[in-house]
Picture 1 (tube, helix red, strand yellow):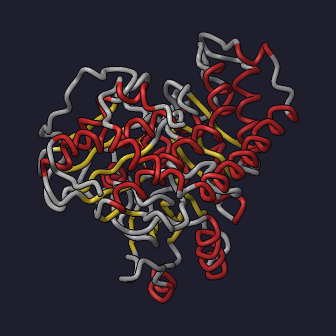
Picture 2: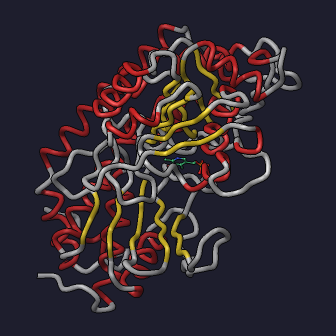
Length: 427
Ligand SMILES: *Cc1c(COP(=O)(O)O)cnc(C)c1O
């Protein structure tokens, strides 16, 4: 018996619900695989917490300078164990993912060094960090040069040109795991490992950094398990589990992490300072929940892919592909369809459900952008959120969802919105 009544209360027609439930029924095996992955990662997190004697006192936090912050120090050991790295920097003072990445780069590069991206253009916000787009305080301004090798047309690594690009000055190689808002595929951990081995074969002392945003706990291994010297990410994405209200992390080689700490605080002070105030409980509890939250997001993304694929839309990744991050793209090819989808997401949110998302001229974009999110934590994209530039081909990117029933409702509500406006045909 399907529980239709409660969905009716959300304005969902029986026909829309039945269509959706049939799609979910077809995903049983994939869902089971996602649950098994969550189990492995959940145990990995618990093991690391037990090994480091996480205690009630670790939740309390410090003020002022933050000396002897046992909770902060223990949390960094827990992160280092999960990522199998020598050290970790996990801080509220790291304001976001871009800051964490900028910190990792700026603290480990010196004037005259070169940064290489062998996977094409990095995430938008990094363009200004690097100086690809002119910006105050960029690496370029400090005399750090940048080189980029684009992916081959089929999305694979251009090994020949990567080899040519590595030179005496090459100090860091940066690899972005998730496609972000590009159309290239996201990379699996194994694939990243192959690239790192290739690079290290040519120049063993090069530092390989992976932008791990949206990738944490999607697979059994992390890039640091396959040779990455630094993995970097945001706590309002996967590893914060929806509870971390801010923050970022850098896990890696001791020297790399130390450099980052000296840059974050000050030479001489490094990791010794940085009060944790009241965020530690959320950092710990969020990390504890993260593997299952990521699983919910993955199931939701997979459901969306299968649902919209069945309706005839192009989806990336599709419902059959292996997944390496939590992002799902859907191509609507029409403005009204794209907007209706976002309205449905917003209407299903626990917060701000009464708000209607409107396209607006967001700074830094050459067209209007529409965003849907009803978040507990502002800007958190491990919570269900969708956005996209309002121009052809009308792609919507969405990610997150703290629980699967919420993403499920979001997708069904989005379909309902399209259905009511007669923008899709349900057979
Ligand atoms: C989100 C993201 C970033 C930047 O993180 P912010 O927290 O938005 O600054 C960098 N790289 C990738 C791949 C991301 O997904």
